[in-house]
Image 1 (cartoon, rainbow, N blue to C red):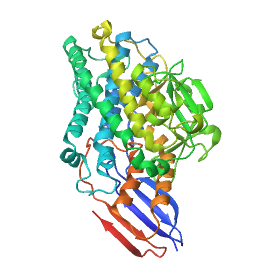
Image 2 (cartoon, helix red, strand yellow):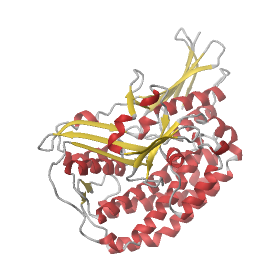
Image 3 (cartoon, one colour):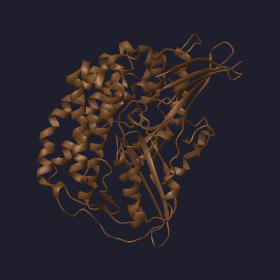
Image 4 (tube, rainbow, N blue to C red):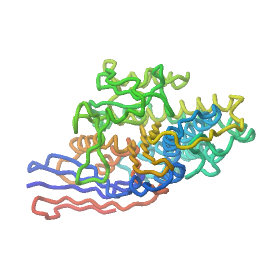
Length: 475
């Protein structure tokens, strides 16, 4: 007799999904699945549009990370134009991208995960959110809100608004940075650094209390993929693809991003709308790999900025015997290190005297039928692949998003957590929240909605092999 536990929907993530846990006759977890239950279809309905429109269109894929799609889409457009961008345009794109890291990672840590980490996995769900955090830790919560606001304000300064700014275009950007806004960014950087290091101290102080979570939240060997600089440094905007295995051995290095199809395949399953990308040489599902903050820190040789490099050295002590850090619980730690890296780069960019120059766009026509743009979104490597006709009208679009690339790993993480906490003796709110938190560590982004928080219902059923409901929880 098989029993099924369903968590629907998963809360405090961007989008809609559910989790199903299958129990065997001994009430032990036999399998678990993370279902993405919504369908978007951007790849199909973009066909027939002009590639010039794509940055503005694909930014609407998500209200949390529109900047990431702006970057990848514009880079695909750059490849179609086959022209060199002005240096100022590249630096302004990097500036907005680093601001995106600050705001998105701050949202993930302070708004979505800190309620679990500071209030407790088994705390009252009615207060286990950012408002509850404000009530118990007002200074910490406000600092996190202001850090996110800092990133959003930089995006607004450049793009005219903080959500869905249609600012980057093939060949460059639309508007320059004003000297007044540059000075405002300089003024606010010290507070942003202070908040990030406060968060790092809070997280590292909590490691002992979450020792079991570290051991069961995605603690398994996998491959890791991300962009690195030509010298092997941490990279968020450009660079080369690198893949390392669970021992830290480099399997692929200095692969031009436009050759991604040589190493990445996409599988589908009938029970989820989210694709299952995999590393082609190892096949499906053996080619499971992870992307995002944890993966990026595992594939790079160094960060390249002093404060981030100091934190990176501490981070790597968590890996056993010099191997990559494998527990997905440490996505939280990697996320905060990347905020430090982003802030240090923002600091350097606003000190560049050329950052306010007004030559910010190159003009050209369709010179190549294929455009592939690859950039690192906060959640992981993002691929935009366009094919156009001579008039620049899209004939085919393929998007490989970070959450899809983590799909196999998220499913395995759910199973691992369920095996550690679910034993058939009844469900508790804490158990359900721990399983959900195993998904939150990846900070998945599943839809194009713009909400960041809110009360979502949770309905859990335990169903035996005859379809009989033997246990049920609602909230």
